[in-house]
Length: 420
Image (cartoon, rainbow, N blue to C red; front, side):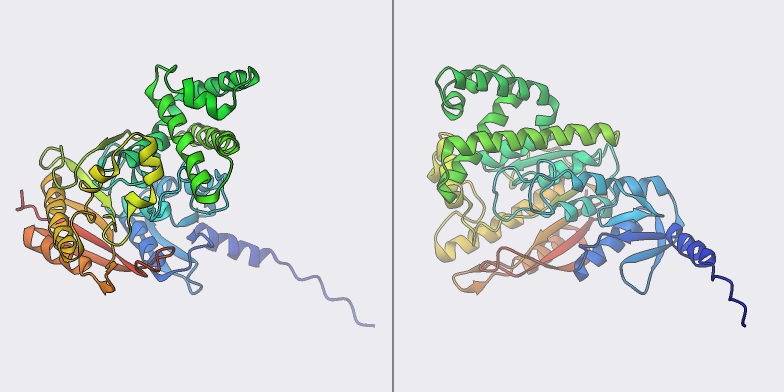
């Protein structure tokens, strides 16, 4: 009778797996496009890591690391560093929506053509911004750059021609500071409702005028506009929509406050103002970095898309239209005006950026009148003429705007030291 063979030990295999884990930075499972893989490598390199890619393309073997803690605190495309979760894992899980990229307050208000939060976080890393630095977004839109910069401890100066964009950006970045007051106001509104007034009517009549804190007033103004959007776009009852959206917004703002405490984040300051990208009220050579995506207004009518909200704010949409880059003029004149406005905006970015610092611009060639524009080429050529040197160009797949464009470019420029 043969003796039984001794059981095989898995200990050596486990030790090998643990050793490999300790040497790796592993990507999120939803990183699936080549441009994301490229950006992941760029941010890892910018944060001082020397690495090589593993065979599975899902992780990088870390050969040398300047600051491991910094990697875990800042990385965007990586789920783990040496087996430990990054901060972004915790942040992105604070999500009240079905969309993976609409965590914390990013989801608030259905703004068309939004920036991708994960890309923006990576962009801030790639251009070398550190806590206390200041990033500029001259087309702040829905406030994605401002919010992601805030989470990384980077100060943000943002401008937009649209009062609606300014409002939503402020709400997303400032409401956590007054979340207790917002909750108190919700209780007061519930009390008014019990006296025979609907929640929506209460908000319309006195919720905004009775608060001394503008941040609280902004929160409920935007909640009303979100409900109005649901009514206009989806035919939902506005009173019910206001109650539901306000509750969800409060939960998301609370999530923001909680994640700040849990991760001990030292948040950056966000200053969002209405302004013109062609004439920025910013000092020369004062900005540490720029992350932005110019509006595709020449092919995507932002005014028409948000007319109901702008009118609810008491604004003249025809007047605002003339202030928007890409919406001025008709047909061929509009294209010429758009090109000139983009050049002036780029010159302003050049003026305010510090020497040897970077501007990362996400832009594509929109289609107008059936013809693709040359926005990418225009920006690249003019940047070179004024002293912004293109250091990297990455092709990016785009979703949700197939009727406008299918691809964008992530362009990274560096300001020459002599161009001061």
